Length: 305
Image (cartoon, rainbow, N blue to C red; front, side, top):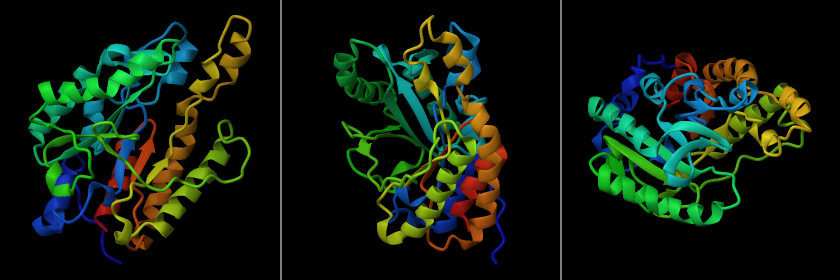
């Protein structure tokens, strides 16, 4: 059994590039990696603008800033935007806008010039007038990157290779439009009840998704993006919140932290228990809430064994 190497989480892609060599960097894609990813990366308590403490808790998905997430090894950032490229989580306003976060990531890359950050800016505004602004948002995002972040931003309409992404913020989009679409197989859903509310059931979904990724991924399909959603949210329950249903809905909602407290330790243990038996398989982007250093490191180490 090969030993797990010492890895600096803040520079792990730099170390990986040295580990695999220059020639192989030009042959493999970002999709061939197992990447720590955060879900609703900007949705920390400090950034949430809420009218109700419970609603704020339900919208809260992370406890660390984006810069801190990058330092601990996260390399896929999930941003949600609304009209004017302000940052959001569904109906909940977040402080700041996309430009603010791009500055944070660009400045971080100035200090870690051989690293790569994948990110998406997904439309996440719920409102009656959403369609016109939603249609314009991808172009606005692309224009912002090209005009103000051309040195660090990378906007392609095709799959990038690892060697092309050094020192770059790589924009991706689940449905394309100026950024390369992440095409890959969908994690199969299991026929189990209570997916959104029963934490133990959600772990079964997560574990089966991890096992499925290992069975079906290989170097032969390295261009396909796998993703495992280990995070969970119940913000959808607040979509129709009113004075009449306020108390029943607000007290029954499971918060992301409720899931993370159970799912994250189990995920950490599963990753370390299975790392030497992965063969040539990969997990793709592993999305987590409330990222913490030990869990993020357990994910990124899969690229070194």
